[in-house]
Amino acid sequence: MPDFSAAPCAARSRQPVLAHCPQGSRTHRLKGALGRSLCAGLLLLLPWVLSACGAEPRAQTLGCGVSGAPCLSGTALVRLQTAKGEVEISLDGAAAPLTGGNFVDLVKRGAYNNTVFHRVVREPVPFVVQGGDPLSANPKIPASQYGTGSFIEPSSGEARLIPLELTIKGEAEPRYGEPITNPSLTRQLALVHQRGAVAMARSNDPNSASAQFYVALEALPELDGRYAVFGRVTKGMEVVDKIQQGDRLVKATLVEGGTLVKDKP
Image (cartoon, rainbow, N blue to C red; front, side):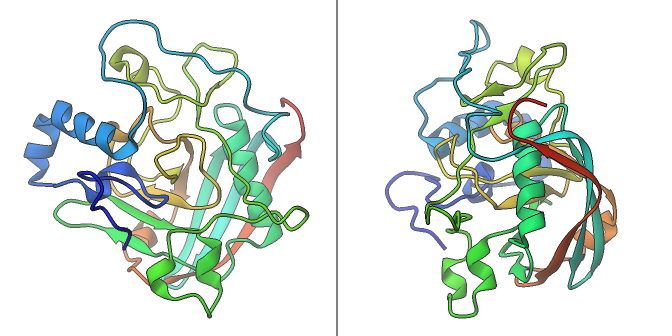
């Protein structure tokens, strides 16, 4: 487990924010939305404050054609063969072209094969099943380091990192690089944390997602606008519910779609 001694709930590895915050009952969590949001602020250590008014910053220097990873044109269907059975994930290239394209590219490269679901949180309430750390496929890496790795580009030897990508309904292009905290905007997100949503894990830097991903075990609106959802489980959610920490993702396969482009789709 990472060291959280520097600050309350401070996330030191590529984890969804609320996993290490104090969690009480479901009722307490839902009623304490503001408190949970403030905790998320501590976790992310980002230079913004919660506000219900004012325009959100727009970062347009990132995205397709500039971020290094390919982008997804259209949709894609990916099958995950896990130790507990098969799971199918539908990816949305319209709302998450860069995040979806990065995932498809890593599937094609075999980056997810034989990795470990290193983090499963179901108590005190269902939260996430997280995996995809390339380090976890290496038998020489101790389990204590799972959750700290990124995908390393073979050509450069450097970690591939992609920016936070969020799409507002009615807007022609996604927004990149900045969390959205305005409730009136998070309610308009094209992709949200419903049960079965698939999203990218990251560190406190919003532009540090790489390979690790998670599946939401229930609706998690407190993560909307802070983490990039790029698809959802369309088959096998009952399998996800059975996955235990330490189970393996045996193989990830592109079933259909998955057209990748270098520039904007």
